[in-house]
Length: 197
Image 1: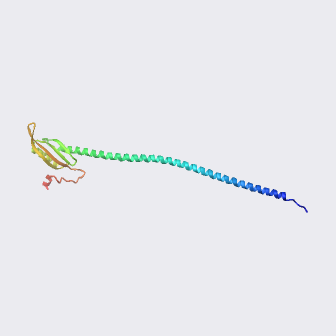
Image 2: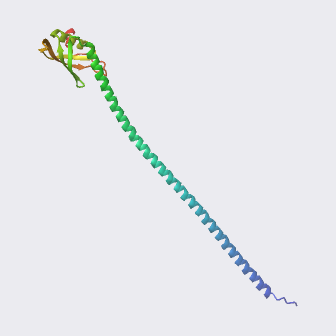
Image 3: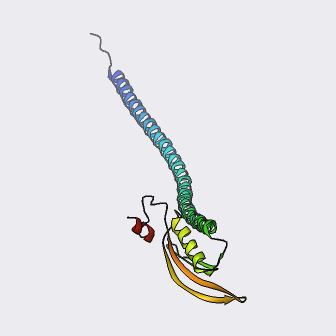
């Protein structure tokens, strides 16, 4: 009977198995290391991208804050300009109102009546001056009363004075200006209209 010595074969086989196990272990460690390295690299890249996005967002935020500050400044400036324009409009309106008042008085003043003072308080107007006679002052009052711009013409006082050796009448009048912003306002307080009705 032939006997074969299998001990070296078994030892060789065990060594091959050990080598295979060691190779497999190193392969697994290598693959795991490569996977860990890949994951770390991907996470690092993602973190760098997030940092870059954060820096970009911060820069955009600063730009937007400066723009918002400019917009707030513009809103304040606009409000200030609108306020000043309203003041200018009121002043313009008052200037034209005074101009219209003086023009209306100049149209109706007779040649024999002279004014030396006009006070416009916004509602009432006070006039004072000299007239050649009582009739001249009465004519002036009548013309003021007939003007569509004035109402409630009242004689304050009238007295006889001497000017350059001539007798004249010093008078003062009070009247109200009709505001055309309220067009339906009638001269209800005018004595002439009360007499008519």
